[in-house]
Length: 154
Image 1 (cartoon, rainbow, N blue to C red):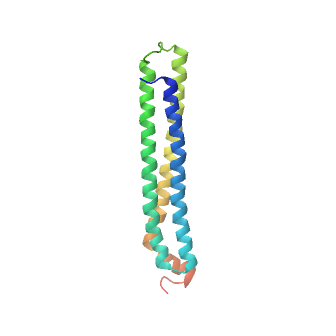
Image 2: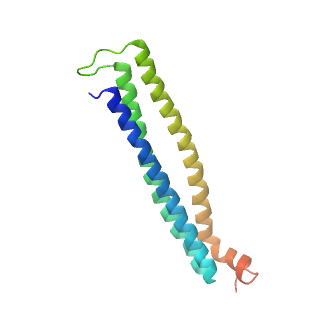
Image 3: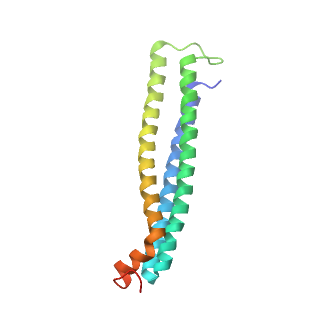
Protein backbone atom coordinates (compact mmCIF):
# COMPACT_ATOMS: atom_id res chain seq x y z
CA UNK A 1 0.00 0.00 0.00
CA UNK A 2 1.11 3.56 -0.62
CA UNK A 3 1.35 6.25 2.02
CA UNK A 4 -0.70 9.42 1.73
CA UNK A 5 2.35 11.47 0.78
CA UNK A 6 3.01 9.04 -2.11
CA UNK A 7 -0.64 9.26 -3.19
CA UNK A 8 -0.51 13.06 -3.11
CA UNK A 9 2.69 13.00 -5.20
CA UNK A 10 0.96 10.79 -7.79
CA UNK A 11 -2.02 13.14 -7.92
CA UNK A 12 0.30 16.15 -8.32
CA UNK A 13 2.07 14.42 -11.23
CA UNK A 14 -1.34 14.08 -12.89
CA UNK A 15 -1.63 17.86 -12.65
CA UNK A 16 1.42 18.11 -14.92
CA UNK A 17 -0.19 15.65 -17.33
CA UNK A 18 -3.34 17.81 -17.35
CA UNK A 19 -1.24 20.81 -18.37
CA UNK A 20 0.37 18.79 -21.18
CA UNK A 21 -3.05 17.62 -22.35
CA UNK A 22 -4.25 21.23 -22.44
CA UNK A 23 -1.23 22.19 -24.52
CA UNK A 24 -1.96 19.28 -26.88
CA UNK A 25 -5.56 20.47 -27.33
CA UNK A 26 -4.48 24.08 -27.86
CA UNK A 27 -1.82 22.90 -30.33
CA UNK A 28 -4.41 20.98 -32.34
CA UNK A 29 -6.67 24.04 -32.43
CA UNK A 30 -3.72 26.24 -33.45
CA UNK A 31 -2.79 23.92 -36.33
CA UNK A 32 -6.41 23.90 -37.53
CA UNK A 33 -6.66 27.69 -37.36
CA UNK A 34 -3.27 28.15 -39.07
CA UNK A 35 -4.18 25.87 -41.96
CA UNK A 36 -7.57 27.57 -42.29
CA UNK A 37 -6.02 31.04 -42.39
CA UNK A 38 -3.38 29.85 -44.87
CA UNK A 39 -6.14 28.54 -47.14
CA UNK A 40 -7.89 31.90 -47.04
CA UNK A 41 -4.65 33.75 -47.76
CA UNK A 42 -3.97 31.45 -50.71
CA UNK A 43 -7.48 32.08 -52.01
CA UNK A 44 -8.52 28.44 -52.07
CA UNK A 45 -12.10 27.78 -50.97
CA UNK A 46 -11.67 24.02 -51.43
CA UNK A 47 -8.52 23.99 -49.31
CA UNK A 48 -10.35 26.03 -46.64
CA UNK A 49 -13.13 23.44 -46.56
CA UNK A 50 -10.65 20.56 -46.29
CA UNK A 51 -8.93 22.35 -43.41
CA UNK A 52 -12.17 21.83 -41.48
CA UNK A 53 -11.76 18.07 -41.93
CA UNK A 54 -8.19 18.32 -40.68
CA UNK A 55 -9.39 20.37 -37.72
CA UNK A 56 -12.14 17.90 -36.85
CA UNK A 57 -9.70 14.99 -36.90
CA UNK A 58 -6.97 16.74 -34.90
CA UNK A 59 -9.38 18.04 -32.30
CA UNK A 60 -11.12 14.69 -31.83
CA UNK A 61 -7.74 13.00 -31.27
CA UNK A 62 -6.64 15.75 -28.88
CA UNK A 63 -9.84 15.59 -26.84
CA UNK A 64 -9.78 11.78 -26.74
CA UNK A 65 -6.27 12.00 -25.32
CA UNK A 66 -7.32 14.62 -22.77
CA UNK A 67 -10.33 12.48 -21.78
CA UNK A 68 -8.10 9.44 -21.25
CA UNK A 69 -5.78 11.47 -19.01
CA UNK A 70 -8.77 12.83 -17.08
CA UNK A 71 -10.21 9.34 -16.64
CA UNK A 72 -6.89 8.00 -15.30
CA UNK A 73 -6.70 10.93 -12.90
CA UNK A 74 -10.23 10.36 -11.62
CA UNK A 75 -9.52 6.66 -11.13
CA UNK A 76 -6.44 7.50 -9.08
CA UNK A 77 -8.51 9.96 -7.03
CA UNK A 78 -11.02 7.22 -6.33
CA UNK A 79 -8.25 4.86 -5.24
CA UNK A 80 -6.87 7.57 -2.96
CA UNK A 81 -10.28 8.13 -1.44
CA UNK A 82 -10.67 4.40 -0.74
CA UNK A 83 -7.25 4.32 0.92
CA UNK A 84 -8.15 7.33 3.05
CA UNK A 85 -11.38 5.73 4.17
CA UNK A 86 -9.77 2.37 4.90
CA UNK A 87 -6.60 3.89 6.36
CA UNK A 88 -4.70 0.64 5.91
CA UNK A 89 -1.06 1.46 5.38
CA UNK A 90 1.85 -0.86 5.82
CA UNK A 91 4.29 0.49 8.34
CA UNK A 92 2.19 3.52 9.33
CA UNK A 93 -0.02 3.94 12.37
CA UNK A 94 -3.78 4.40 11.93
CA UNK A 95 -4.79 7.94 11.06
CA UNK A 96 -6.14 10.30 13.63
CA UNK A 97 -9.46 11.96 12.85
CA UNK A 98 -7.89 15.37 11.94
CA UNK A 99 -5.37 13.66 9.60
CA UNK A 100 -8.12 11.67 7.97
CA UNK A 101 -10.25 14.79 7.52
CA UNK A 102 -7.29 16.65 6.01
CA UNK A 103 -6.68 13.93 3.41
CA UNK A 104 -10.39 13.61 2.62
CA UNK A 105 -10.59 17.37 2.13
CA UNK A 106 -7.60 17.27 -0.24
CA UNK A 107 -9.17 14.51 -2.32
CA UNK A 108 -12.51 16.39 -2.37
CA UNK A 109 -10.79 19.56 -3.63
CA UNK A 110 -8.99 17.64 -6.35
CA UNK A 111 -12.21 15.93 -7.45
CA UNK A 112 -14.04 19.27 -7.58
CA UNK A 113 -11.23 20.81 -9.66
CA UNK A 114 -11.29 17.84 -12.03
CA UNK A 115 -15.06 18.16 -12.43
CA UNK A 116 -14.80 21.89 -13.24
CA UNK A 117 -12.08 21.26 -15.80
CA UNK A 118 -14.03 18.40 -17.34
CA UNK A 119 -17.07 20.61 -17.87
CA UNK A 120 -14.95 23.29 -19.55
CA UNK A 121 -13.19 20.77 -21.75
CA UNK A 122 -16.49 19.22 -22.86
CA UNK A 123 -17.94 22.62 -23.78
CA UNK A 124 -14.77 23.55 -25.69
CA UNK A 125 -14.78 20.13 -27.39
CA UNK A 126 -18.36 20.45 -28.62
CA UNK A 127 -17.89 24.03 -29.81
CA UNK A 128 -14.68 23.48 -31.74
CA UNK A 129 -15.72 20.13 -33.20
CA UNK A 130 -19.01 21.62 -34.40
CA UNK A 131 -17.24 24.64 -35.92
CA UNK A 132 -14.59 22.53 -37.68
CA UNK A 133 -17.21 20.09 -38.99
CA UNK A 134 -19.35 22.93 -40.35
CA UNK A 135 -16.24 24.37 -41.98
CA UNK A 136 -15.55 20.97 -43.52
CA UNK A 137 -19.09 20.71 -44.87
CA UNK A 138 -19.77 24.30 -45.95
CA UNK A 139 -16.38 26.01 -45.79
CA UNK A 140 -15.99 26.38 -49.55
CA UNK A 141 -19.41 28.04 -49.83
CA UNK A 142 -18.73 30.40 -46.94
CA UNK A 143 -15.23 31.28 -48.16
CA UNK A 144 -16.46 32.00 -51.68
CA UNK A 145 -19.35 34.12 -50.41
CA UNK A 146 -17.49 36.03 -47.69
CA UNK A 147 -13.95 36.35 -49.03
CA UNK A 148 -13.56 35.61 -52.71
CA UNK A 149 -16.41 36.38 -55.09
CA UNK A 150 -19.54 37.38 -53.18
CA UNK A 151 -21.55 34.31 -54.18
CA UNK A 152 -21.48 30.65 -53.26
CA UNK A 153 -19.47 29.70 -56.33
CA UNK A 154 -16.89 31.61 -58.38
